[in-house]
Image (tube, rainbow, N blue to C red; front, top):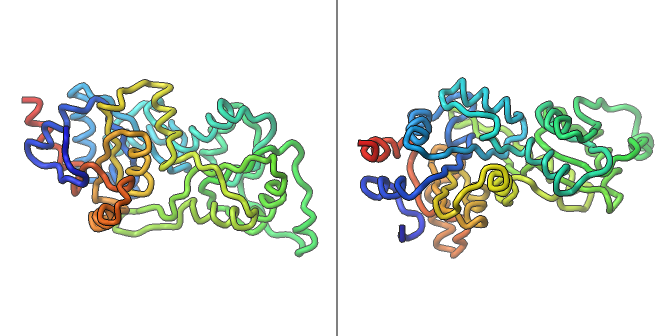
Length: 306
């Protein structure tokens, strides 16, 4: 399908597009749902894609849920999914540490229960999860006793993030051999009603600033989530599309991995954002196609089945 960048999918073009796709990679927050409310028509689309023989996977930067937790949420909202179809940063971070970094030692974790559970499932010992109250003063903070055998600091979403955790992470990261891993760098999490809350990227920036180091990022726009899908499930990149709501994560990852991209306007990025990148020549953050909502593809899917 030879088309120009940032083309609206409608009518016959939508039908031809769906016919050219075997595998659909969906971001979740802002694409299929906002907070705990499904985007109207999104579940019907995913069900229709599966019925038409297409494979569906879910790629999310959100580290607050395990694969099983995401499968449960997908089921509650009407999508349906097996844990093995979910590739989130909690799971993929654990897989990276085990299979790529081959970590021999412990992780100091700034992150929630899901990330802790995925590390445990991968056999990776870790410390630091949960709240850490402030004790003592500056001299005591600078002299905190480090846990032995910590060889990596991992930063994910952590509602208990604190000055004490920031201080402790700095102590570990002063060792240049200590790995510094971030699940993702999204600065905001979109919720229903147009609201948002600070995202993991805010915590990562704080640790990077204190440590004078840059984290290695597992999530989008880096390719590791996509690489995990390829290695575990296989796919044909020429017949695969990445569907997302963020230009700087979903669309840029698709561009990096050389697969087609589809922007939905139900989440973070706007069409004006995409056009601005297009005018500036930054095409890695310009989608191949866009729709107002993924539900806009329902008529084309229905007509293709007739």
